[in-house]
Image (cartoon, rainbow, N blue to C red; front, side, top):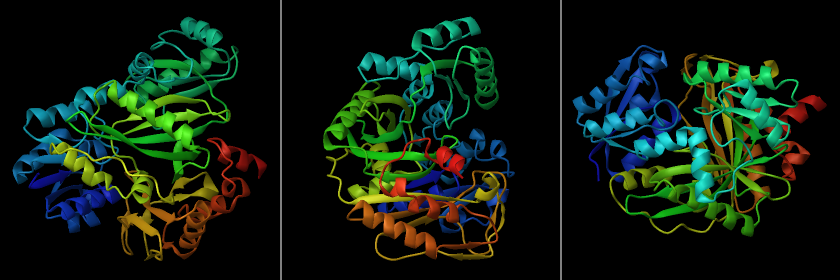
Length: 445
């Protein structure tokens, strides 16, 4: 086991990793930008090093400075959290060359799944169901037009190097395919410095259901059930739960088997998530694989009792993972962002003047903020996550709503009032929703 780990991230995930390290008796090193000098992950780590100015490219994305910080402090491993460098194959390779353990999958595994077109080809070869679409990247408008005709409209054009909803455009008909294709390529180039795109059939009104997998370096690979992440805004998840209200035990078995097949295809190790689109008719299709810990990992922890971050560390240290436990109860996570829902969710940085976190049975709060904390404008707007657990979905839902009622954050706008409305919506309460739930709700007024 490691003696010291550097956390190459910030905010609530950095605190989450620090807590896991403390339980394992491992020392921690926090890195921070000048904007995060007063962040709690800096306060609660054993050591800390400033790695640059506020902008992410000068700090949390600055590989030489992060590796130098690990070498200076004698950290044997680096945990990347999520976002920033978590799925950067070059970073994983540099860590390896520097004699530092990267707590995550190998660079090759990251690279193969990070290239969405390559991931699609790999899944087809592994027998994992994929959405009908192009075999690889599509390079020109004429090919895009012919592929769309073959697949059948509507189609969705996706960035091959993409993620987070960037570089994704839907073409409803042949009349718009040229313009849609061009816009998707331009967005992909701007976001990822890679203009390659591929085309898939646009699955209408699907659910977004993902399977948590966990592997080790000894060839063991297990799954820990599913998470339903269908409540989204512009492809950004807002509410997640486990188990999914739409999944039967038979479907869970089939999706779990497919996720394991996906992981086996690249000899996957450490924590990862295989994401699927689920149709109303019960069909599911591979969408992508995230080669890191997910923001929504706590709901899986609550229903399995498995500490996924500790398992990541153990796996990276060469230990074997155990058999997956059965799912017990139900968990719902609400992402609380510094955004103004009344004005199209625009960011709301500023100083938090009052902060009170709720408690009670089954309530978990993962956050890095406090009264007096200044929310910087440079990073993701996530302030924290409220996770509610209950023996049933109804109980978890009731606890989540009550906790949101008690949650006080003043000084900045937050998504708390909006989340309360979603949790009380009849369709959400009934478990009858899909990825376009919020769009239809807003259209209805």
